[in-house]
Amino acid sequence: MTDPKHIVREGYDRLGDAYRPPTQAVATESRGWFLGEALQRIPAGADVLELGCGPGWDAIVLADGRWYTGVDLSTTMLGLARERVPSGTFLESDLTTLDMPERAFDAVVSLYVFGHVPADEHLPAYRRVASWLRHGGVFCASFPLTPGDDVEDDWLGVPMFFGGIGRDATEHALREVGFDLELSEIRENSDPLGGTETFLWVIARRR
Image (cartoon, rainbow, N blue to C red; front, side):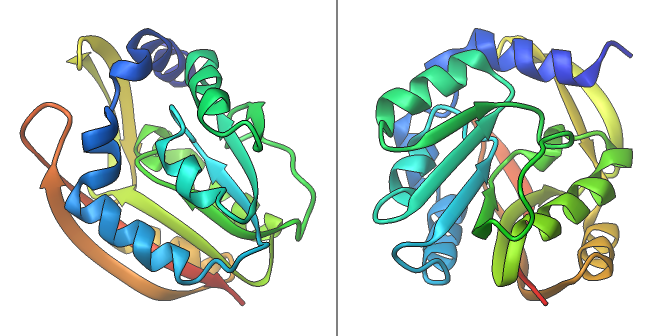
């Protein structure tokens, strides 16, 4: 398999603003519901890290009244996010190798991103997230339900890599690295291809 990170980076660079336009990015039922749940737990003035900020639609909400840092593999996506949230700090990096200070954030948010992380990198990534959170901080993320790695040759017109470990393994791994699960729910909503997509939505609090 070609380098999964290269596939993801190149795919999103090519997609640009065509990926999840505003009506889809903000208003899908599951995404809107989950952002509401997350924001109830992230107070004003909090330090927030978003992994896989994409074109910045969620960043607009997350950065409102908070100290926001966005991370993405894609140069194109970061450029769009910077335009939408000029007050934010943005880093071009792979979340699985990202180097951040320990206990630096009150919340880490990651929507539709861990589905692009190779299966064997999920547990180490959760451990890194736990190290970045202050005690009592929250990890708010969506996770894929299908275990294993795969490449789709034509996803929204570009090749794309997908990886995951499934619900049981995800919940077990999060608990193993020091989280208590406040919310863990499977929800289905429309996807960018006009069909449906099903994800596990989790809010986990750092012990």
